[in-house]
Length: 162
Image (cartoon, rainbow, N blue to C red; front, side):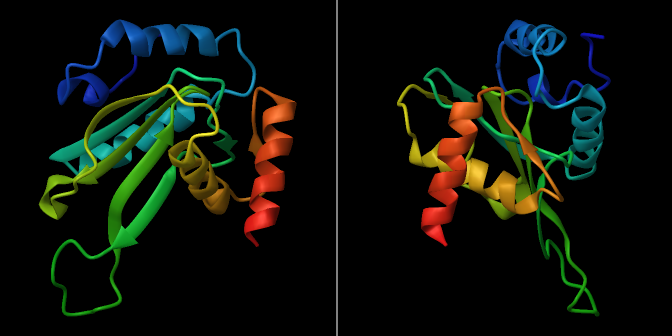
């Protein structure tokens, strides 16, 4: 299934729809990609937060995104004032679509400065490491990567941060 139920990825930016479809086509033959049902679940969360600002990271280097055993990275906070100050809503969602494509969505009400498309061309990118660190933090039990060597290097980097 190459068509996604949601058009949210292509509705806000002129991000090439064919690039998304190519990544999804590759998912069918590449192990350790986020399963489409997880992506669909994360996109349904995004639709509830609209209107959104998107920050899309497309890796064009040897770096990779890890894939957690959850649908997405979710940050909670308060978008509106509530009588109960302990109510927190989802205010940011990060989805690793594939090992090379990551989408971060933030409600426009927060006026995030992180929006647009970034093509990451540098190896050992600090941004990719930070995204992977967030994905790792929000995983429940496991993470996966298409490269065992890259995954071991990432784990070593995480251990050195502790």
